[in-house]
Length: 73
Image (cartoon, rainbow, N blue to C red; front, side, top):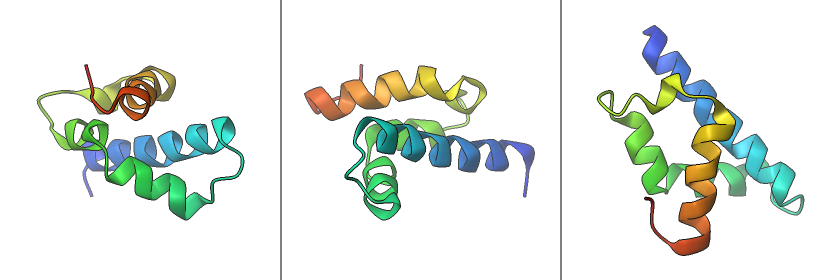
């Protein structure tokens, strides 16, 4: 596994953990499902976007905005 792939996996886990902190009733499975089905996750997988180099809270801000508005900007 490449370093970039590991960073993407770590970011995905961190986004799910942050989501569970904001919504304590969510299970890990629900939080991961929300992350994996998001546009933010699709952009995270795009190597050209370099989101995996950012801090988890920075990427989570985009993810949270997407969750609240239905779109990522």
